[in-house]
Length: 287
Image 1 (cartoon, rainbow, N blue to C red):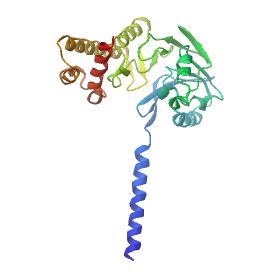
Image 2 (image 1 turned 120 degrees about the horizontal axis):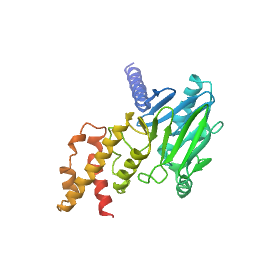
Image 3 (image 1 turned 90 degrees about the horizontal axis):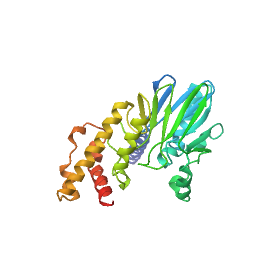
Image 4 (image 1 turned 30 degrees about the vertical axis):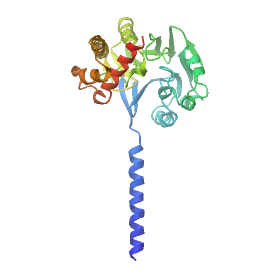
């Protein structure tokens, strides 16, 4: 009898542990209206957007196959039109994967540099679910559907050389990924590249694109002024690391002294500040 009770207890604990693990692994997903018929979709730390028109849906990054399967079902339940366009922000797998889910109805559009970038990654498993664009552009193109227009504008090289600024014209909203942030510090060490091109790309965006709302690939929706603030963060960080090098500090000393306190309430400050310093330092020392 005791053995039976013990076995039952062990099995119940195992079932509880499994259910807890499954619950912990469930992604956080939500669809939120931005303005008009434009919506942002959260998939854990990643975001994409879609615009509903009478003739179909214009979607940006598909993010992943699992997410796209979920999103396709959500869109089918909510709207009576299919996804007609998938507009890529850039080629990186964590944003561009999963497009095949929409291939039965959609045309895929990206910057022309996506093609050589994806060709270079041929055989790399993490890019296996990235569908190449059907249509590419060089500097700028306009997608028209259901009386709505969306501009794709090539951003200056920074996080990647194929980044697109995707502007939903009637909504005065842009979708931009990774090189632009809203009240969030950049990811880790900038990929080890220099920070100066990020500043140039952000300033070019601010000077050349008219918009009111920014929907980034990570973090909250914001306003144009938020991008100015993010650019200021980059400039302050670059100036502080440059001064640290001139003063003879090593990387560890700078990671302890460059606190960027004006931005302490920004998302990922505690997790990535030191890595931001490291990436800025590496970019300066490698050039």
